[in-house]
Length: 237
Image 1: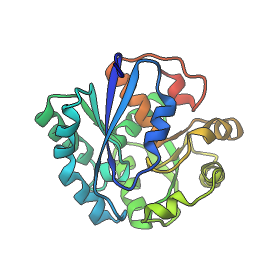
Image 2 (image 1 turned 90 degrees about the horizontal axis):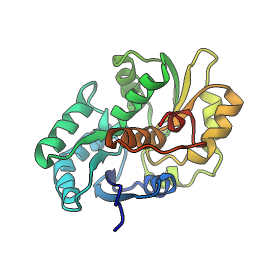
Image 3 (image 1 turned 90 degrees about the vertical axis):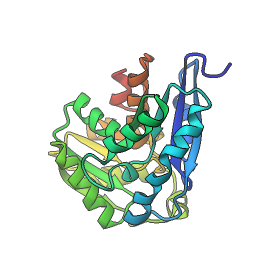
Image 4 (image 1 turned 30 degrees about the vertical axis):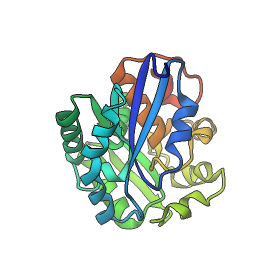
C-alpha cells in the first residue's frame, strides 16, 4: 500500500506542472502524494482569488483517498486576499473534511519563523500587482521584504518555457546583503535542484515554495527524515 507512513494530499492550480514531480523527488520512504486540481488559466489576482471557490470540493475528493493532510499548494492563491486569507482556506478545508490542512503561504511564514528570518529578498514569476500583495502579506507577518522582483508572467506556458538555471540566476539577482534569506515564490517555479548552489554562493538560507511547503507538510504530520540537500529548511526536519 502506497503511503503506509503518511499520505499527502495536494490541491494545486490546474496549470501547475512542477510541484508533483518535485514533491515526488522529495518523498521519503513510506510517503505518497495524491493530487487534485482547481481551475487556473491565468495568474491574475481575480483568477487566483476565484480558484479558492473550489478548494472545499477539491478537499472532499482528496478525503476519499484517506490522506493524512490536505495542502492548498499555491503561494499567491493562498495569500491573494491578504493576511488571514490562508487561515480562512485552512478553516474551510478542515471544517468540511476533518483532516488537518495547511497552505503554501502559511508554510512559508512558518519556515521564516523556523529560520529566524526578519528580512527577505523574493524572486517571483508574477506581475507587479501580485508581488505587491505578497510583499504586504509577508510584512503583515513581521518579515521585511527588502527586495521583490517578478518575471511578469500570468500564463503557465511562460513559466514552463524558462531554462533550468533561471531560479539560480534570478535568486542571485534579487538578493541583497541585508536579506537573511532568499525566497523563490510559486509552486510552479522549478527550483529545488538549484537551492544548494544558491545557498553556498550566497552564504544564507534559500528556499522555494515547494521546499517550504514540503517541510511544513512533514512537520505537521510528524514525519522525520534526514535531508542533506534541498536547502537549510529541509535540514531542520
